[in-house]
Amino acid sequence: MSEAITVDNAHAAASQQILDAYSGADKERVTHPELEAATAKVQAELDRRAEAVRADRSLNDTQRHDALEAHWEAASATQRELWKAYGQLVDQNVADAEEKLFYTPSNERDSTRAAYQLVRSDTFGFDTGDMEGLSHAREELERLWDRARRTGDRALKQAVGHAALERGIAGIRDEYLASDKDAAMHFQKYTVARIRQDDWKSGTNRSLSAMAGYTSLAKPPELYGSPEIHAG
Image 1 (cartoon, rainbow, N blue to C red):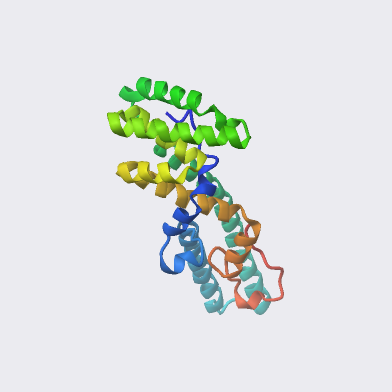
Image 2: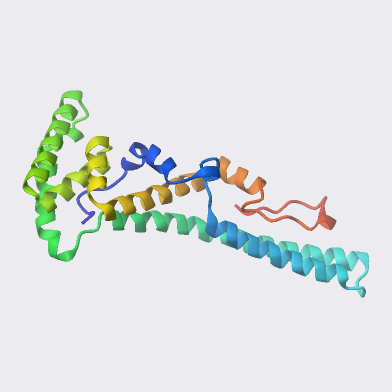
């Protein structure tokens, strides 16, 4: 399974495919649909409660301000919890997508494990750090890929494909994904999950998203002048 190979390097190598996973306006802004939908619900409830306070003729100005302030603080506390939970969600989404990308059925794990060992042994030059070692390792990976294709060795094909994903070997990676629709689907889901994670962990991008109103709350206008409360 994924015990033999990780995808720490695949993200950088797949940057263009990550962008291709988005369309139209989404290429201008990375979206966080779960958080944005949850934020909209919190905002709607805050607006509903604020309207109820405004309509309550039994309240004087001070009481009305205090009631709006209480609702605002409660909504902001909820939003902070949403941000915290969402941070955990984007991490889990990446982990889940990676697991599915490298999933191997139980009845194929022995043969795949042996293929992983062969690939690691023949491409040890990737870990040497010198150009000669890297070049030789790449040649060996291409040789193993050709062998897997010629012989129809499914386990070797998967092991080489996973190594290409990890190492960012675009040619083999793309051929592997083109030959396996499930792997291509899981790779796209992984790249989307990873770019959302990266975007979320960027304090600048997160702040811009909040400032644009996608993941932050609008304070009742009566409270302008009170300290702003944003999640994060």
